[in-house]
Image 1 (cartoon, rainbow, N blue to C red):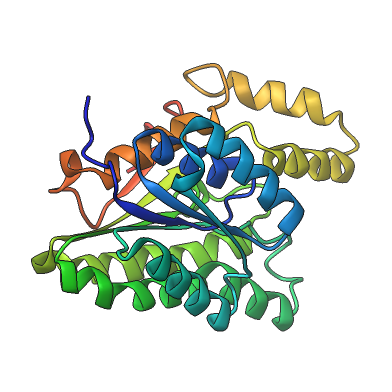
Image 2: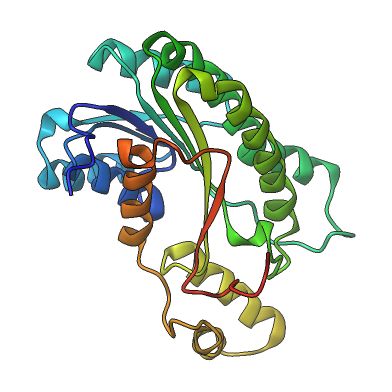
Length: 264
């Protein structure tokens, strides 16, 4: 299926590894020019080489950046536009905040999570909207988490801040629909990434249990009886970014092997 993404231009946050890297790879394979960004330059350069092998070197621009900082967001957008002379797709993706109990978190932890997970999406969206309006085409995609529908693992910071993004994106989709700009959220369930491994290691330590046993047990509760693969998230993003999904906007789509099938 031709998704019509050849020579489109995308910015993917948090793309040195995990889901962000998988998304950048899927888009690059479709012929999209991708800007990848992350805070750790060594990991970013490795990702740049890996993604380039999937497409061509000309399809990848790597920019070290911290997307919780407005100055870095502006630089990433400016450098992307200067390189490719357009901007069509933005995938807002940042690492999740640490787990913690709602009653025990300090104000500083709340503020940091808001900057990282909520304000980064707001600021990046505001920065790219004028360019998308000018060309009357755009895709804003927020990579969030199924915890916005079913909290778990003491992820109160992730749940609360990402619920804010859900509300923001619903309102933004209404504002931008007439410009042929769509705004959608993807809610991954359990996907085999380093973050999932780390979360279950923390849970195992807290409960005095074997993390591998905990993960195997939760896998059996998933109707698909397996964890998701990062490339499945990448392929979903590619579809949502394409012309095939032009009438899809203001939605939050779970990709979770059926885990939340009973939850509206």
